[in-house]
Length: 591
Image (cartoon, rainbow, N blue to C red; front, side):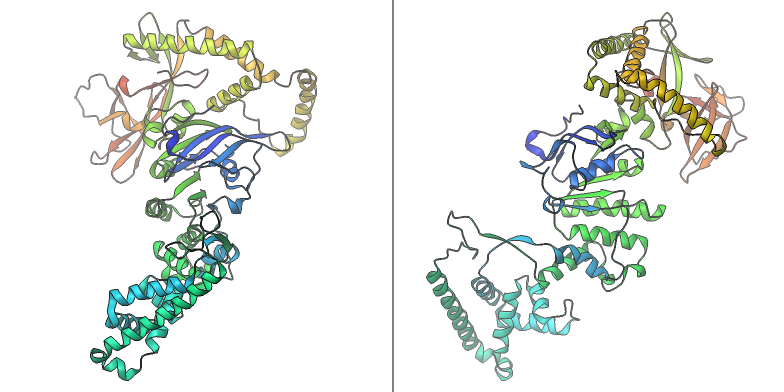
């Protein structure tokens, strides 16, 4: 089981416990997925195609049934709630915009079809209180100036009252009340405002008091109770909540607020076909943001964009996440997106979580060989070495690398632990043990399906496969886990032989950790190998340098100020401190 020690129980906002997905054909897509997510975290689930990341996201969103496991939002179990009631919004790889609708209508669409919980507010008393506060704070001159400003500007919402409500930050009913009070004063009185101010204010106060008094009488007769914010209370003293559709003004307000955040205000009257790819992606984001939910989920939203736009949108999504204080779950196969966007990364392979951690933790301390190879661009250099116990040296062709005294102890401790683990697996081979073997294979890359040959050979190959399948079926009829048992036994036998001399291990080193210098004629380079680069790629500020090292193709980096071409020679060296040591049997890091 994948555990998460990075956040405390008090910080947990969304909790995914033992999620599993099995399709009707018996194919298992997600194994024992466990993750606790804190509020405002940006979680990126990354892995190759088919690893189960999108399936996991869809289970959380309620778009895919959960075979087993639990999803909690705070203390609320979400398993049996429909997707529309989960307080989440999702952005898909496809923009899925309605081509016949404007940008405004596309963003507003979820608001127009859904109902939302809202307190029952007495709008008469609320509008009177707000109007009195505005008049007191602004005075007659301030009210007059605000209305003049609304009349002078280009209508934003299309109605005078809506524009005034937005300007004064009050409810629509308050804006309408202020406009009614304003229109009750004659033009002549407005001209003589200095002489008439006291009289006008008294008249307005009398009208507000009369409206409040009439409403209070109605409330008393009906037996209703209100709190200090004019919200109606239930018998138990809590606010009454009703499900209702948003008003046209509320929808417009939220759409315009969202459009401002995404720089879409100038495009609200345009159709999707008139937008660029980045603008359409922002509209899709806006449609999710406008719902004002605490959790956003994104399923590879940038994969349809070109490289430059993808880079721009990447930073925009992170800025947006920080601005609205959302909790975001982002799915991608691009490890660069994961490294640059995430507060924590979840690395998956074949339905299993391989590692959870911050970008720095995953990059600097990979849990196994799959994570080491998958995270990092260019990928980690990997080569096989033999551990010579007698000389306490790692051997790779002509290359010798001495190890310190602590390495042998670390090496033996690791394999003793693995021997105990695999002894238990083989003695008590149950479904949990089988899944451990499947996870091991997902790390090492073993057990992948063979592809069929060419079209001409297809029928023959299929017949051969079918023949052997029929034979195997007889063996596996009694033991469906035969293959996994055999793998477990083979791995255990290989692990038990760890003390043999010449034991092989995988060594990994990041390209940027390889020390590369442009070699000068006649100069001696201590503890370095002089090689000729096979290919150099100029990336602006640095070169990617491809070279052969002891018969193995490798890649390193060198500063672009050292102009390099394929006719030059380079001195290559590295420190033992920069090396990662992996067990080739299980793929785990030896540490």
